[in-house]
Image: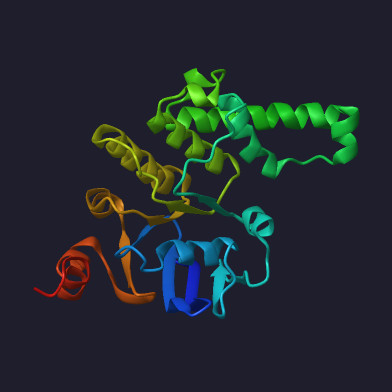
Length: 254
C-alpha cells in the first residue's frame, strides 16, 4: 500500500529544549497509524509539524509525494491535512449543523461576490455543503441533533461533533490528538468504531495520538513509539506490546 504521509528526520527545538530529534512517521493510504509514548515524548509536537502549526528545524513532510514545507496551516488543510486537538474546540454560539458547516466551507466553490450577492451559484453550493454536513453528522450518529446548540450536547457527543466537522472538510489525512480524552468506556468504544469506519469506508489515512492503550491496540494498523523526541520503535500492535524497550520506556527498567 502506498505511503500517504512520510515524515523524515523531523527535528524541533524550543529554546534549549530538543522536542524532536530526527523523528519519522509513515501513514499508508487508508491506514490507522498510532503515535504513542510517555508524556513529553514529542507526540503533539510532531502532529504540529505535520499540520503546519510547528516549524521544524530540519527534516521533511510529504503528503502523497508532495512536499509540505513552507505551506501554512490553511493551505495544508486545503491539501487534505486536517487536525483535531486535545482540548475541545467547538463554536458554542452555533448549532451542531453550523459547526460542521464551518468544516464543509473549506470546499466551497464560490467567490466573495457570489456570497455578497447571494447568486444562484452561492445558493446551489450552500445547499450542497449543507447536504454534505448532514452526511457527516449521520456518519458519527448526530444527525438528529443537527438543530441543537453545540454546547447542549454531552461531552462525548461534542467530541464526535469535532470529528464530523473535520470529516466535512474532506481530508485525505486526519490527525487526531487524544480524541478519547475525557470519554468514558462506552464513548471510547463508540469512537473506536467510528475511526475504523473512517479508514474502511472513507479510505482516509489516520494519524492518532492517544493515551488509551486499549483503544490504540484495538484499532491501529501500525504504531510508532516516541521517547525523548526520537523514534524508539515501530511495528504492529503485537510487536509493540512485546517490545521490551517500549515496556521499559513506559514502566521503567525494573
